[in-house]
Each structure stands twice: as C-alpha cells, then as structure tokens.
Length: 99
Image 1 (cartoon, rainbow, N blue to C red):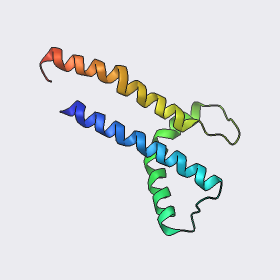
Image 2: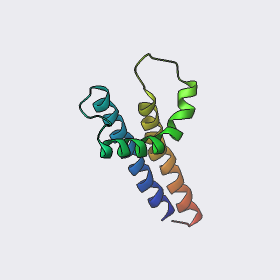
Image 3: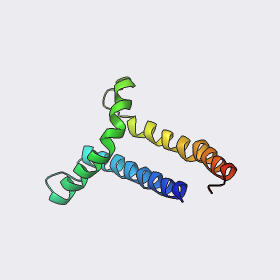
Image 4: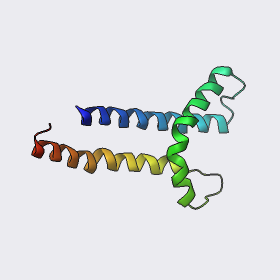
C-alpha cells in the first residue's frame, strides 16, 4: 500500500517536471507569456513544487550558459528511484511479510 502511494507520487512528480520544462520552453520562445493570469499562477505553482528539488542539484552542476539540465537530472534520479530502489523496497516488503 505504501509503495503504491509512493509510486503514484513519483509518477505525478515526473509529469509535473515534464510540464514545467515544456512550459519553460514556451515561455522562453514567447509562445505563452506571464501577462496571462492563469499562465502566471500555473508557473508559480510549478516553480514552488520543483525548485526545492532543483536547488541542491543546481549547486553542484556546472554552469552550461543558458541551458538548464537540472530537470533532466531530476528525471534520471526519479527513474533510478522508480526502478532499482522500488524493486528493492518491494522485495524487502515481501521478505518481511509487509506486502
């Protein structure tokens, strides 16, 4: 049950990061702009969700100029968490009789 909830939350986080990355491209190329109240509010919500995840990674990553690879790094970390780590937790739960 706990692992199912964790898997769902990781999946939701995955999509939040994808939406935020696509929205940042749309903002950068001026396809959408923050003069629209809905766009501004959506951008602020996505920033508040993703920034705590990005901040520690941005501290250790080198500067690539105008390219921000932080979302890609976080997505790779999510793949690692959803793959081997979740598999290990499932096996640990089965072995201890929690699953």
